[in-house]
Each structure stands twice: as structure tokens, then as C-alpha cells.
Image 1 (cartoon, one colour):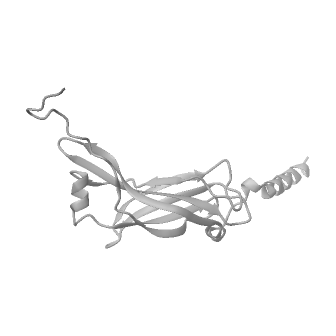
Image 2: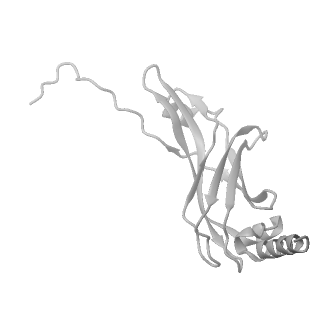
Image 3: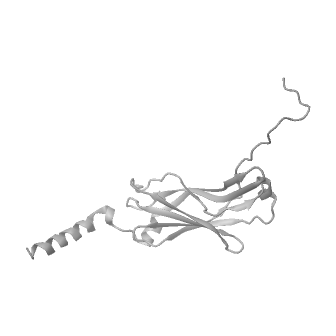
Length: 180
């Protein structure tokens, strides 16, 4: 019985070593297997209050990735750090456990991933942001990480100043207007 236990242990270790789902990817392999496609960015509202006027906006990015390696890509997470272009002040971050279950095959492209900062910038209205000279320009550092790898910088991208938000229309009748 004493000889049986080490044999089972060795057999178990060898089996795990050859299972594709158990293999880890080095940081270099991960970086060399991903191409970022269709990058886009905008600002989205995280809080809106019509009266008194209050609006919070956060930067949001979207992208897809192409697997440019010869192996299927699975268990990949993405994280983003949003920073000011002038003083590198942090404006939050985001994390997404993105590629799970169905791997991205070699040469294939993933679905679109969306990451929104967990920190917002506050103003009174959309116009307040558009005309405020103090509203800074931001960029995002996009990282990928997988089982066994350290975070890998995929790129640094500008965050557009486009605001995807429409304020409520004023309510009420105009004085003297007759409805027909």
C-alpha cells in the first residue's frame, strides 16, 4: 500500500500538467497573444438630479480583442486605470473578468468589453462640463491578466470628451399658449 500512494500522486500531477485548462500563461505569452481592436471611449452619467442641478460623469471605454496566438485564449481579465493627462492624478479604475467559459480561438475576435471608472467627476449640467476649462483631459491604461501572469500593459489610450447623456426636457406649459 505504501508504494501505491506515491504512484497515484505522480499520476495525478502528470494528468494535471497535460490538461489544457490547467496550463498557465506567462505575462509575455499573454501580451503577445492579444491585439486590441475597435477601441472607443466616452463619458457616461453615474448620477443625475434635475433640481437642484447635479450631474456626475465617469469615463468609459469599450474594445474587442483578437487572439493573435496559436493557442485558445481563456480566463483573461481586463483592468483599466483612468488618469489625468496633465498630472497623472488617478480618476479611478475598473476590472472585468472577461473571457470565461468559451475561449477565443486563434485568429478569432472577442465580443465587445466595456469598463467604466468607479470614480466620477461632478458638475451641474452637461453644458457645465462642455464649457468648463478646468475639465481635464484623461487617458486610460489598459491591462490584461490571466492565470499565472502578472498584469500586462496593452496600451495607453486617450479618453474622448464625448458625453453620452441627455438632460431632461423642462416640464410645464408656456403661459398664454392655447392647446388645440
